Length: 350
DNA sequence: AAACCGTGGTT
DNA sequence: TAACCAAGGTT
Image 1 (cartoon, rainbow, N blue to C red):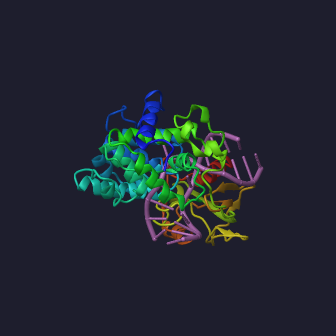
Image 2: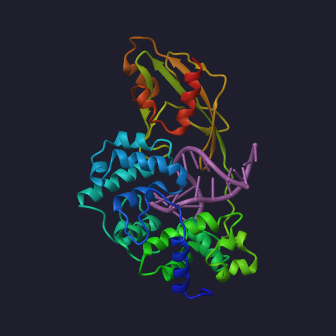
Image 3: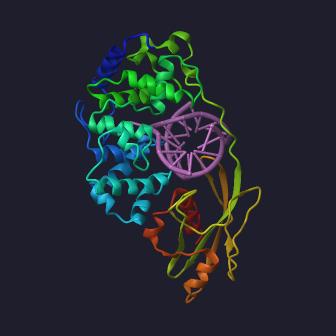
């Protein structure tokens, strides 16, 4: 399986980790267990998200909700607003659901198998929390570990099929002692040394055991399937304002930006704009629009400003733009990024 | 099982 | 600049 015994590989990796690793706010000291709440919070935030983006959110959440009980008692809208800008908003909804389940149960369960039943925890996150916070020898395989293991074994199995193989390899490597440090060390190795491009093989504790290095295939591992083309959509977003504020709507729980506050929009479609019928109000389309790129489509938005005369009943506004409320500046801060771009344009055009 | 789900940094 | 991709999970 490996060109070096698993325990020797693990020992080398841990020694490499001890000699100097990234100092991150959620990390326990080497050899120590982490606080389950903090480990879980950081792991959820780190799903498909860079460390640099997570750090300020992690600090803000921990400052505002120091314990899982505090988070469980939080208002949904406040948590969604605090998550605004971080992306993948289903994580925030699952975060709350998970916090409430854990708080009701008296804390997080201590095994990967039980953790994986909680909302928002899949195989990776459950294993990471089990290892880092509870000391279980669980195999946590993220994108970094996948890459490291594909190179170590020079495995040409394309993703996502390689994922299962990687878990078996990782399980064979995790030591009974310090499994949490092993998880973080293997992630650090992928993030700082065994990078997707320009890996620093000379700094790698596993360099002499790496089959891809011998074969000269390091940058070709892991093999990824070609990705689908990203369609381009057109749409309209409305800046509906009055003396009472800006009209904001709560988006449906599921789907794009699910559960988040938003500005009213029309449908976003490929090839054509589908404006909303803006009632009796004309509105002014701004000269510039908003460009944004989501995971599976890109978007150009026209921004339409609509002034609602003083004294207009809310029901009339709701009939035209959807159920909502007059939002203040503080409410607007809870909008996701694409909406913030529209807000910026609308506020500049005043 | 493949599609869906955000955003920002790097190259 | 456009592509790549990050401590993935859900349906």
